[in-house]
Length: 251
Image (tube, rainbow, N blue to C red; front, side):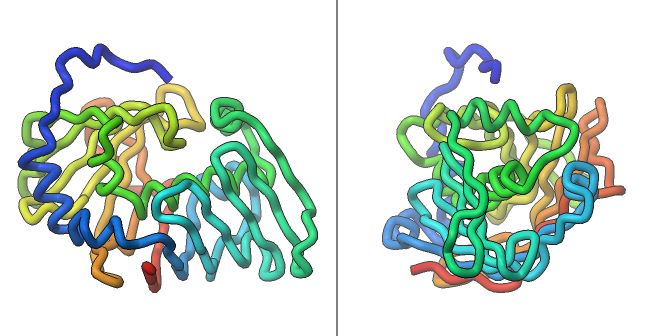
């Protein structure tokens, strides 16, 4: 992924990011967590286009808050379990027997997402890093190897949003190296923009709502992935993905 000139990125975390971290529960609470469990549904045009009839309803999801490890129970069918790691992905049957497995560098996995169709392992890999980034933001932005800077306000129909551009380190599997986070005046994450990993010349906006607090951590329970027009306005329909979190727990 191309990276812009980083010379003008400074340590601008005090202010916007500090406000967002506080609103989301605070770093002290986040550092005490080790794992999360979710009850999730994922659906949308992207799944249909890439995987046909793949069903990702009523998923039980478990993962690490500080390492990119996510396990899905009920993935594609009730008796399948998917295991995502940055350098591997696997499908297991109800008896724990490995049915499919693939190991590769994260760059190779991401390159494979540009294929016209995905197999179940590719879908599991994409959903794995999608969900992990969803849960770990904005906390991961406070890690010392992230570079951030505040951008000019974005004028939105519902009011102005403060924007934070973030450069992700290579160790984190994510949507793109440079991403733009939009926060409202209370510090709630409302939007995230980045170039799509699975298609060239496609800009994505993740729209967040339905914020609820679980175990002290504020989580956007609704997320819609939309394409973005050349003028920066998201296209409301059809949504590429709709992610709904019904319940969450951190420990």
